[in-house]
Every structure is written in structure tokens, then in C-alpha cells.
Length: 230
Length: 97
Image (cartoon, rainbow over all chains, first blue to last red; front, side, top):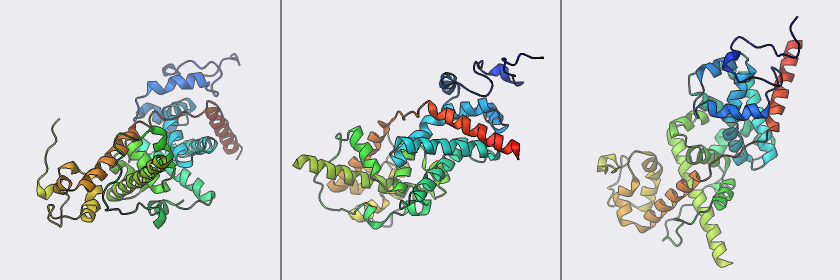
């Protein structure tokens, strides 16, 4: 009879770091070492295949690789750490349930981000916030849209945006603008990838990004004016 | 690397003469110009309009500042333990059905 203290190793265990705390529980210290093993923006095909077959260690690798980006996206969308962790958990649980259905028609990150965005928008809907469906988010209320302004420039932002001011301004954006701004200007996704994630046209993605930047400019200029007065 | 200066046909498939264009018409094309391969700074309207030049500079400043918002934040170590526990629960539920 085998020693019950020794975890049963699956056939491909040779490719894994040794598990010290049993086959199921993956310690945080091990998890922390998993991320650098996989190149950013890509998932090793073998890791993905093993996760799709139900291998929890492979799933932990995917978690380690994506947790920061998914958590950051959730945090920027809801502005609250506890809620962002709940959404991150829900997103990864959905991923665990659905990863077997991923067929590789799009990049894994695009497919997963789409899932995360739906989780976030569903959460906003439950909270009764406006613009909680993607269509509504992409077409915010008139008051939330950037104003057209063709008057002479009175204040330039060039060289005067600090990180905190920009972070605060982003939280004021309508959900659709915020999503596209985060995905494009912060995360560095291309318009064609964003269009796929949000199920919209490339032109729509460009337009949303432009409106987001215009709205941010409005907010930042207004803040500068107020600071100048006080 | 030197940027290629677009010709008039490439400047956003314009319906108006770019030299005579109003700010409203130029700004309506701006999302496509910014997202296209040709820098809007070469647009004839930008060369003559201080207002739109300032707007473009501000939008570029905002996009550049957004890069400084990385690195991303880290969730707590506890989160993975919670996810693992939830996965185990799911497995137990599906095994018992």
C-alpha cells in the first residue's frame, strides 16, 4: 500500500515544481513562482491543454499569469478592492467552468477578457448602475459625453498630468469609455482585439477611445482650473 | 524613425478640402486619423489651427500618461485560496450528482 502522506503524482508531473502541501492545495509561494515561467500575453499550448483536461496545477499557472491584469481591470472598473477581488474570483471560476469550450478561434486572452468584461458588466447591472449592458455602456447619457468645444484654447495639459490625477479622472468616465481606455491606452490592446472583446466594430472602438480621451481632457482641465483658483 | 507624410488621398478619405476644413469637420475625422497609420500632426488643418493643435497635443499627453499607470495592482494571496476552495466545492457538487 502506498504512503498516504505522499501525494499521487499524475503522469506529467515531471514538468512541474514539487508539491509540498499535497496534490490539491497549491501554496501561494509556489503560485508566485509560476508567472515568470510563461511568457506574457501568451499561454503555453501544453499548459492550456492540461487546464482544459482539468489539471488544477495548469489552471494555477494560468491564474498566476493573468491575475494582476484581470484584478487591475476589475479594480479600475469598480474602484473598490473587495469588489474587484470578488469579480476576479468570479471571472476565474467562470474560466474554470468554460475553459474546456475554448477552441482557439481567437487569442486566449481576448476570449478570457471578453468573459471578464461580461462579469464586470453583470456586476454593475446587479448594483443598478446605469450603462450596465455593453450597448448602454457604449452609448452613455448626453451629460456624460464630452462636450464639443471649438473656442480658443485657454489651458494646455502638456507635461502636467500626474498619475493620481489621471487615476481619479478615469473613475469619472462612463463604463464604455473607461473599458476602451483601459484596454487600449493602459493595457495596450489594438482596436481589432478590443472590437472582438466588446463585440463591436473597430470604428466604434476608435470612437469610444477618442471620446474617453476628450472626456478625460475635460475633467483634467476643469481640475486644473479649480486648483488655479484655490 | 522618420514618419511618412501622407498625401491628400490618405488623409482620412476627406470629403472636404483639408486646407479649408473647419475645426468641427477636422475633429469629426480625428478618431480615424489617430487610429490610422498617418500622424494627424501632418494634416493641413493642424498646421494652421492653434486650437486643434492644442487639442491633439493634450490627447497625446493623456495617452502617454496612461502608460505610466502600469504596473498593475496585485490581488491578495488569499484570493487564490478562495478560488481553489470554490473549485473544490464545484467538483464535490458535480461528483455527488
